[in-house]
Length: 176
Image (cartoon, rainbow, N blue to C red; front, side, top):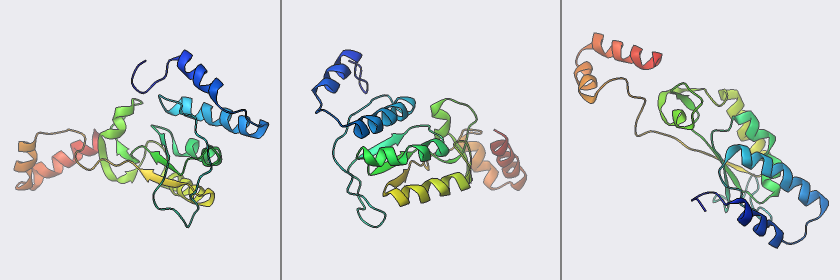
């Protein structure tokens, strides 16, 4: 099998080996599987109950990676994720990034002062509040070691000493 994804035969064998489930457990798992399939490469069944609560654990035992998933969509699945044993949800970078639907555009930051692309600042705040209410941490993936490339390092170094060039590069960055 490929790294990060079970082939269908392995997944079927894994599912058949799991203990029998009650109807409510099966419904939670089906809802969660739909969320997982739309957001990740690999479905990993999880058993057990989350130990997290809004005021308790500071280190999650299990993290659901809501890769490139809009904040509003993550909110819809918080209870199911918590019921399935996830203590935390990792969201993709929230800052304004290079335009595009491809996953990697989230990792090309354009403006660290703006929340844009997967939802608004209010959407992010609501996600965090709802997650806290159900005892799930939100972990934000961030990119601080680089930004979208609009000029060479030499151009930026020269622009530091020339306010007009610096303003032009900043404009180029905001329009990228």
